[in-house]
Image (cartoon, rainbow, N blue to C red; front, side, top):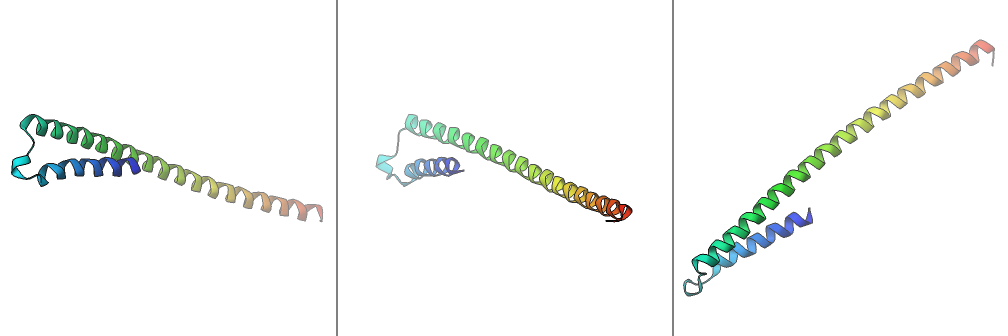
Length: 94
């Protein structure tokens, strides 16, 4: 997540520098093209990282749901075991 923020900040700094430059210091066309290409690569990397984070969040939510279901199943089984033990204890006179 920090990497995404750094990439975004870097891309904004590069694009901001191009806009803030005075007209006499405006980068030449090849330099501007290079900057735009770097920005495009950074944006593609940000998009990829955001997709990865989204997939990880989805997997985490699914794992949490599975754990909750397992917890419910365990609680039900414990109740059944307790009921069985109580029934068995009653039948033997304990």
